Length: 228
Image 1 (cartoon, rainbow, N blue to C red):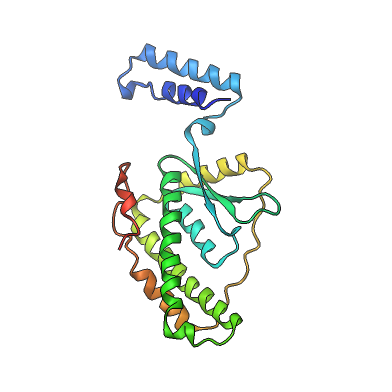
Image 2 (cartoon, helix red, strand yellow):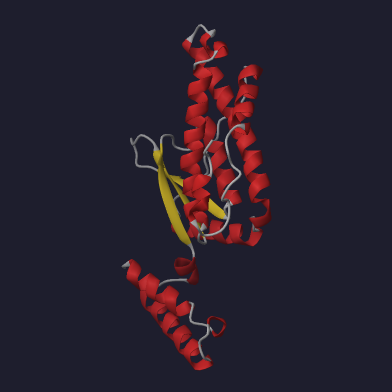
């Protein structure tokens, strides 16, 4: 089924008295939309709930992946990871009413970029270079990342607080579960930290990420998120 059918139904659903149609026009549009939905086996959620995806290097169990459920919470969406057996990485998919999914995937991109930069700066610093083994360096980076994720999560919730909608999130979760019936819960590993200095360095780095602009509305201003 083409997206043209969904777009046609969506246009019909917008033909209401509130949008300037007469009562007869609104009734005819509603009847036509209902007929098309029956013909193609679509529900209202199939029309009104969208989704967007972005490629990601891990499959939902990395230190930074705890952040994506927070992004979903803040954008009134529900997320899931989709990957093929043997495939490196995965797609992170956000389901919800517009513009939530598009804002969510943009946040994933800019937050990943900010974390990558933070890790690069941390690795260039004294604390990381003083770790003598591969294991301790890996642990230090994970603790640094955990610190960044914890602080970024709090900041996102503070910024988006006024637009978080519980009913919309429930609707998004139901739509996600309907679309991805084979999905299963991830067994998230425990995030025990080893180096407090690395954790707090990550927290401080997250404070330097610019999350003050364009977190609402339908224009392109949200693309300023994450810039220094």
